[in-house]
Image (tube, rainbow, N blue to C red; front, side, top):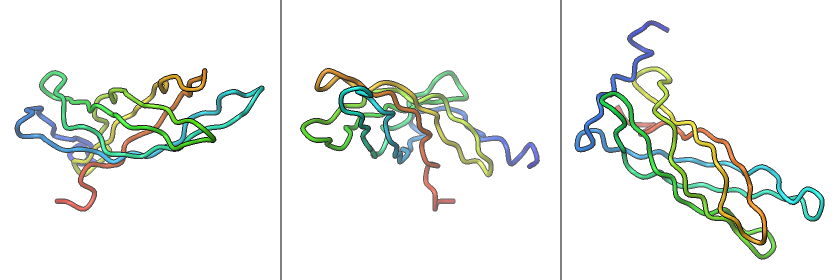
Length: 119
């Protein structure tokens, strides 16, 4: 891939660079001794939050699916934009769910490419 295809050419101006990302993932297992389980989640990020002049992040707020009698809230900020070629990018996200039923779950995922069928 040449240098031109690697660059995102992102110059962050919140009013000009508004977009969101889809995401989906699964939490890591919790309660390994008593009741091992995980949860699934999906959603759409918040809009662009500029970080300096050349990068941005997104807020991620969602909740997991139910397992027996509970779900978990997820509230986290993504990492900065990571170029994947052709001017497109993704974001790396990691964190821990809010506590429910006395436990939490860790998670790690990457957002999907913004505007996947756009120009």
